[in-house]
Amino acid sequence: MGFFTDAYDLFNINIMLLFLTPLWHLTSVQESLLASSAIFSAIVGQLLFGRLLDLLGRKKIYGIEAGILAAGAVLSAFSTNFTMLLATRTIMGLGIGGDYPASATIASEYAPTSSRGKSVALVFSMQGFGIATAVITGLLAAAYLPADMAWRVVAFVGAIPPAFVVYFRRHVPETPRYSLLVKGDASEARRGLRLVLGSDGEVAKAKARRTPISEFFREYWPLLIGTTLPWTFMDMALYGTGVFSSYVTSSLLPTKSLTASVLRAGVPLLIGIPGYFAAAALVDRLGRKPLQLIGFAIVTAIYIPMALYYMKFISVNSYLLYAFFGLSFTALNLGPNTTTFILPAEVYPVRYRSTGHGISAAAGKAGAAITTFAFPLIKASLGSSLGLAFIFGLLAVVSVIAMIITAAFIPETKMVPLEEASKEKLVVESPVPVPHHSG
Image: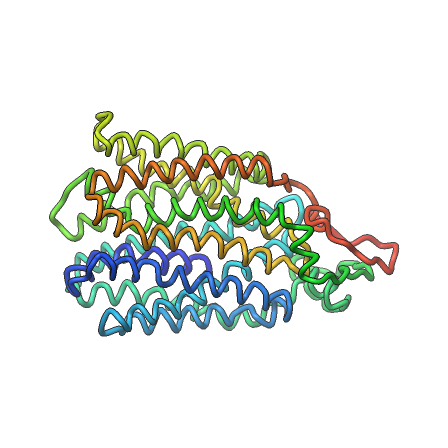
């Protein structure tokens, strides 16, 4: 439910702006600020909550971020002007940001080695349902409600799922790995294992060696390059073209109906949803690194002809190009959108796992913030056709760079136990190995 809501509340601004721009006579700068405000504050949330999860434990933090998210969504629905909506979406973004390292780390630390990629990918796949729900909610609101009520309903729906799960999140047991390796509490680790095994599991008396954060950065900086920059470049594409899909779709399939505009902008995002589940099915078979490379290669092959089309160098049927645009989301979700979420939850040691994931996710949202803020300004300054040509050309270049970084800095973690994948330095006080259950 966390990731369902994260996606809903980040992408629903695409729908809300279709109502708000004519209602509030928004400028390009105001559109940019509303589109990027939650993303900018998500960066703060990812860094803050990522560190707190490592310092205080997963259990103490889990649920707080969902409460902040719900409160921000409710307040945004009752905003009376641009400034208030900007502020409330900023609050909401803090909760969204906190959910990234929290959910990823907990899913990874509870998952068995044999299906860890699938487990984390299925958590992340709820993003697809969140995006679909934003589109459907927008369609229903546009069809049956006046514009000033419609956008408020779209905003308010984003508060319902996190409000329901706050209680349950606050009662999730501490992960066995954090209990044992950080707190040194074997009995608490057994309680966590009981949650997934249905019975008590045997645990070793082991702890993760305490290392200063300076040593973490010194030892893991190559991995930080590998997990941050591809996520930055991927989010530049996903959020830039996703939040402003209406810019692309309106240029390909013009329409005057508001309901038709919502549908036209939303269909490419819906085309991308099967990619999440293809990733979940393949990530433990093909591996994280191959999927990430394949995804970036496909979107590069899509973005180049789209840039050439808008530069008027080639002529392509607009319906075919519309379908290609939708397939770019499928490729991102099959590859880097999913794998950049999984990898940081695997390659960092337990004392810095959430910190590393938070840094990586924040880098991604920095890329998203750049494009969601800049794209309306680029379109306004260069014009629709030349502006879109520049945007797709830029995204093609950064996708190629992301492929190079992936090849150079990312290890393969498929079927590798979490302690081995993260090069965990363990101080074992018992001959019994730390369990890596495979059921």
